Amino acid sequence: MILRPDDRGQVVLVAAAVVAVALLAMTAAFAQFGYDADRRAAAEGDVASLSAVDRSLTVSFRAATLDATAGDHTVAWRDRRAVGTRIRASMLADIDRLERSHAERGRSLSATFAAAEATRWAQTRCPSGRGRTFGACRAIDGVVVQERAGRTTPVAAVVRVRIVSPTESSTAVFVVRAVS
Picture 1 (tube, one colour):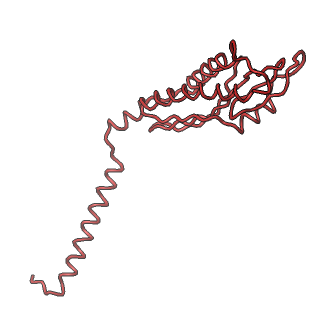
Picture 2 (cartoon, helix red, strand yellow):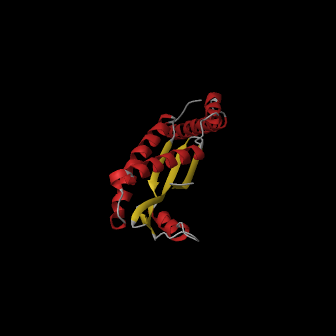
């Protein structure tokens, strides 16, 4: 069969259609049949323990509380913002270490102080009741403090944590308390 010059365009069009069908078939096969080691690795992936994150944040908050209020750091109620600032600074260093340790395991962990949730917690869950003569609770950028005998007492910190990895995605809000 001899092709005329005006038939060449049709041949090119048919050849392009054949290539497109072949690429479509290869794409479908690739999507259905993955490399088995990839699937096995994803299934065996290390999943972050939210309870371990909660424990780390609690230990960090309690240590920061001791540092911020011990000895000559006992702070009058009117200077409560300084206590909140010291606690945040100390906890941020620990949070940075926690984020790095999770990055080494192939997951992203980000933790931020949740100011709005801390304010809500201070308004609704502030320690009070019979036999307690405590003052008001105030939230300072995610750290809740309470007036007790004219002094600033750290009560809780509220931290929002987001974890993302190939096998998980979760968000949690932790209220870590100075006393259980």
